Length: 139
Image 1 (cartoon, rainbow, N blue to C red):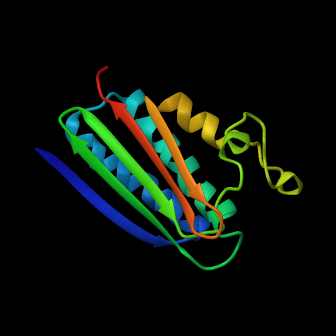
Image 2 (image 1 turned 90 degrees about the horizontal axis):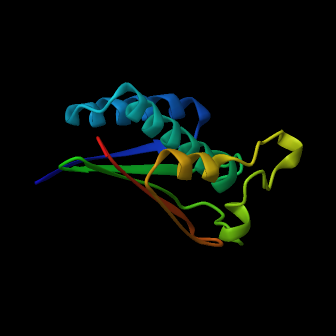
Image 3 (image 1 turned 90 degrees about the vertical axis):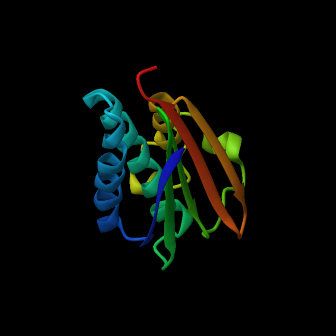
């Protein structure tokens, strides 16, 4: 039997910390280690920040987060209706950034992939992006 939550927040940087804390609190019900919860919160921060900074490019929009727990498995889906990613493989390369003048590190997807067991990125230009992450607690 799974449990889930859904959050929708305006694409504002000030909401990133709230989403991060909410996911941490939700996942705590399956007794993760401090390291596991930190990994999940960091991955969520990167995903939400990508939606805000790259998806909406300083325009108004909504970031949606779905978090599902099934046994010891956590699935997190972060989606937006932003500009989309023209080249997902290029965007996933370490150190690549589409905003070099803003001093972005280009490590968002790399961080998500490092801290989670599974990372799937789906995007369509002009439609938006969906990032699905999974992690098994206690693996």
